[in-house]
Image 1 (cartoon, helix red, strand yellow):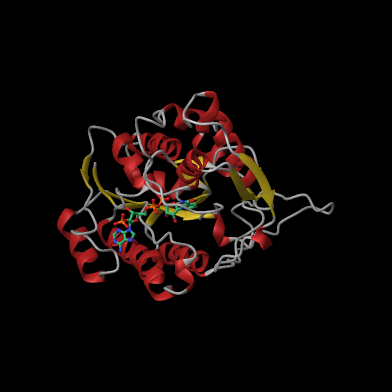
Image 2: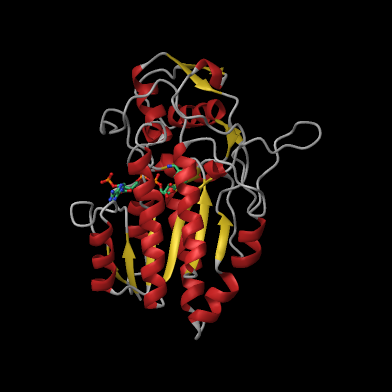
Length: 322
Ligand SMILES: NC(=O)c1ccc[n+]([C@@H]2O[C@H](COP(=O)([O-])OP(=O)(O)OC[C@H]3O[C@@H](n4cnc5c(N)ncnc54)[C@H](OP(=O)(O)O)[C@@H]3O)[C@@H](O)[C@H]2O)c1
């Protein structure tokens, strides 16, 4: 199978590159070779390589910056996937595309006010530019009629790239006190697990004789997430406690306190409820869905002790994510 993989300098693309089957012929151009905001270059890349499958974890993911760079975010998150879909349809190729919990407004709750997980059937309603551009990308893929899987995930982290996990570790090594938002709920997802689970789905796609029938049966939008629920403050606490237990801070753990999002103003509005129901995903692919804490533990195991490896994350006071 010939696979065109984007975004390998990002968290999920990097993890996918190490999980894809050795039998696949993978073309993974870097941004210098393929700029997704360059429509001509993107079309050329696809027509030259002639993939059987395009996997697109690349995205404009700077949620706050997107508020002032809407056109750039739209080009990468909406127009580029539209071109991938159009070219995939012409080639009879498949497209696996990743999307986000931020396509929802984050206010789904029951009569008692308890947050309810979003299903694929729920109405979308993005609160920010990033969410709107990702939704436009989804809609273009669906409208193209290409064979596709759109996998919506949330709160992606990894021991690679820029993310909340690495930011919290870095801050915990530098500071004695941290304040983290505690009224936004969701499920953290390790890029490594998302990549491994994507490859489990891919293995199912490769089994049947008739790939077109497989896409016909299984193509569509899926919520793609670990199980369980937490908020950013509780997630930060879990990260730091685990790092402390495994002696990965190099100092005493900082004191962490929870604050409402209203005390941490940022340019982009974020949903209070990012919970995604994975019932459809489990029914279709029979994946076993881990609790987010077990994937966090696996990620922490890969972190080296403080003295031996400086972290490469950017500094943020309180984390929120895409
Ligand atoms: N991170 C989250 O919390 C989160 C949550 C929900 C959904 N998602 C979705 O999950 C997917 C993977 O996210 P991630 O966290 O792995 O993203 P990431 O770490 O921010 O990586 C994004 C990737 O896209 C590439 N990219 C951006 N603009 C590009 C351009 N113009 N041309 C070529 N490549 C470009 C980046 O390349 P450079 O390194 O060159 O910039 C990088 O490789 C995305 O679809 C995202 O929307 C993420």
